[in-house]
Length: 609
Image 1: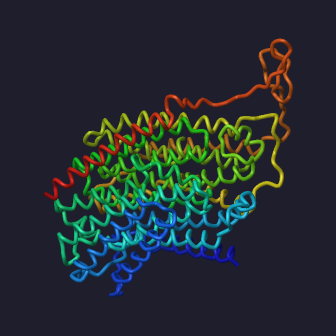
Image 2 (image 1 turned 135 degrees about the vertical axis):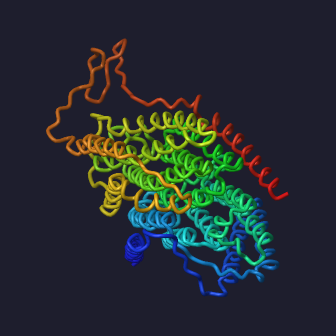
Image 3 (image 1 turned 90 degrees about the vertical axis):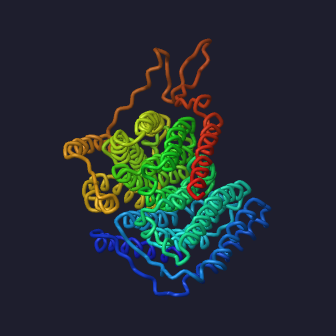
């Protein structure tokens, strides 16, 4: 019954999302006033219920900081409701434009595919973790509540509504990260909650500030704010960017996303690709025209740039596959925020490209890692040696997913190339060119060593029988197809969705040249030869013993050492923990970005005064 409901709900959401693409992809943004007069009161009551629940959880698990943060946020909301809500005359609206449509497609297609994948994953998860209480009903309810909140967030024009859905995503992430109920999962769930509550307080302060500026509620509309061209808009833009930085887990708030890796892998895929962190970068990109050209915008861009560079470097030192993916996500979100903070029309175009391609490739990679972990019992990259022999189909998909993150002509590299070109022309752009050049090089290092491990041929292993659940394999196949398809359709997506949005906002637009597109298409076909050829590995192949420097060797890679002692050969990647370890770089990045956050806050206060 539950499985059927999940599949039907996923099919309906995907069909509706696709129909939006057909009906709403052209023209200017469309607005739909909400006739429900009591919507404000209902939202306020729902927010109070959420606050009461979180305070209860804070007391239950003795997390004083969470209780204080929720109490502060609730007090701000009560103050708004008591003093300002009665004077608001602007009815809330829903809207759709090309950017919100792209976000809806990511949420509706990627998010629901992850939900369907989780059906098979969670059954095996509970078989392998019998001590964890089976709460799958709650799990799938929260997953779809999460997706619903994301739809509300990207389609709402009223900041009050955006805040409401924003807080629901915080609640859902808290529940999903703490799903297993272990001490570690509860600790990390509260870590995520506290950091996002800090962002929520900044969001609530922005609402109060706008209530003072416009007691009739005029500037509670995103459209009115962006169209006003008033200097005061910079204050809520900075506050909302701070909220976005916490939700997108940029430094100094990156630790919550790394800690969230304790959750079941579909939750990690959901947080990284189609929900939580994407909400953070969405709000910053939405307000990038306000940030463009300002010192505050430059500081926010620097936070993103340093996060990109340092998180990429930390990824080198990780051998836990989920942590590599986590730091890679943090790095790419940093690059998106760097683009949005500088905020030129070319960089906003690049930022939206990054959001799109990152969502697809990262969801594929997380689900591949989850599948591999359940089959071989490890998510250590070193244990994935010879994966191409043990799980050939999953290995090929993982290979394509990794290629999608850093090889041409897949989207992430296209996006970085576009960003590099745009930074050259931007004010202070050379700083970001240097950051992108160094960070991009580091990215190649950690992706390529993982890729090499997957396709290395280990004669001591053999293909695992009774392999992957059919439904899980189907979802992985669909995501792999999407990774390639979106790359092929990139020019169409850019011309029909991204460029019209940028043109409407800035009055200018951009695109890749025809020559570059031709080169990238040719590279795509050449690149696909390698992973596709792996499907035929094992058919009439000839395996020869490894060359061991002339020593007699066995098929299991043992060789005769000195004094006649037989030794085992082992191959392992370099991780340079002493150079790029978390202890060494995370603290430095946290301190640096915390200082930049404070500086942006001080400048915003200066605008108010």
